[in-house]
Image 1 (cartoon, helix red, strand yellow):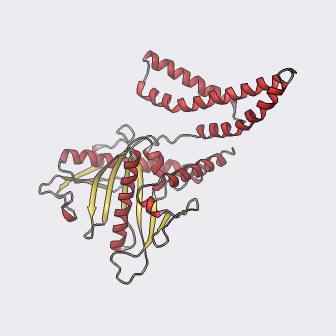
Image 2 (cartoon, one colour; image 1 turned 60 degrees about the vertical axis):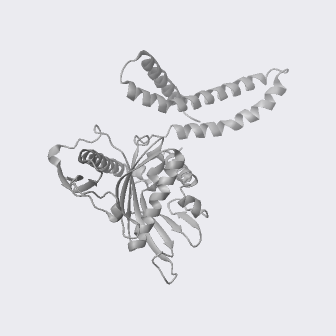
Image 3 (cartoon, one colour; image 1 turned 180 degrees about the horizontal axis):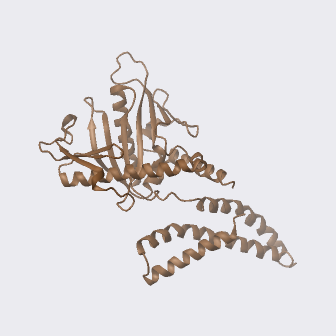
Length: 349
């Protein structure tokens, strides 16, 4: 049974926000976001209350000889819908990640495996680009360093759209590939890896970075194959002195590069603060599906067998071609469902 007093408080809050927005009072942007978040929850609450009311009415009809037969027909169907609606409400009432609605900063770097790891990092980049295109998200490469054979030494991208971080945050970790590399003449299967990090974009109000804490250097951009290469000192490297974090941007405009580099730095510092908070909540940490530990091996892509295995939830899919082509919805939906189940279990629901 979902606590009705909690549902009443949520409905009251929704109605209060609705009145404030109609009157143009308060912080309209913040209230608008909260109102939008609560709207689908309140719709489910209304459906749940209506269902309970229909059940009460049908049970009352049992005492009426003329209506008893109709009530006996309706009650089983009505009662059968209760568990499904209650579960839907429990999921809707789970604590929200404040960063879910934000754009995401995606970083991909090759791990063990040399040039093959760099090529695999390039494959992962194309996989996320295609997925973003299918979802209607905006995918913008911020920094790209290519290898001699067309792989990726490092790439940073910004992804913006509906529910970007909420869905991509499960991608952080070590991705392992098993296949015959293009550089292998003997046909032997090699194992290599790439590391993916997905960070929520931070706003200036989230992270205060004093000017004294950063060192800004300008330099000439460089990269294989002419990518992001120019002949002026427009590239910007920003070092955050307290943490040692270094970020770079190599677009054509030095002013734009500084803004982009600060954007990435804020995202990294914001992510560090989120991780510290998560570590302080050990129980909550255990209820997450690998959204924090960058060193965790989360997935294996086996090309000879055409399969992908996500080790966190034990899911194996034999449709590797579609997955590498950006069709990640089945996988991400399974990760979200498992994460929600773990959080419900942690709450004793």
